[in-house]
Image (cartoon, rainbow, N blue to C red; front, side):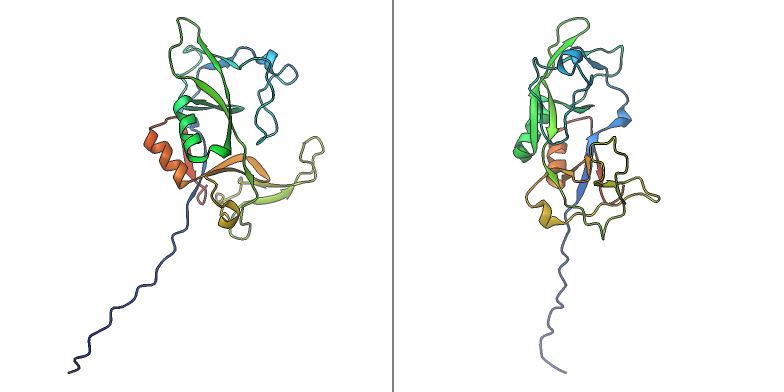
Length: 217
């Protein structure tokens, strides 16, 4: 009988790939009850508070003024969609703590139809960073060229996640680096977060935001 000590079996280490999420307002909550009262002052030509995505805010002549009205819908949560995102103070604090360079903010005025508003401050928020980080060979999505000349990105490449069987977005980690949030190039309405930002939102207890696994859309 051999007295040689048996050697332990070495287990092959598995590299855990980081997870990424499509993030945005949780539409399952229903409509939030607010309107922008001074929209004609802020955007007299278009009637919409927007500029090219990822470019921050124009120089508004006055702060956006929101009327919160229960007759229209539920009370706003920490994150709502108003072309830009409409976010609360504590949502802003999370974003700034996790990825200060990834966001731009502009303050809003809030009032109620009846009574005095004494809730949290609200801000418009824009995600500034745009990254060309999709690994097309590993992802499942539509890749095309914009053929309609009326669109600003006419003749340019675009991505779409409207594909049969569901989309799958895989990202090149070297293109993301230390970023925790970014817009997807060629599909810049799509905003992606990493696990760090998702966990920070959960810890802070913010509401109204939804994270969807980008690999299972």
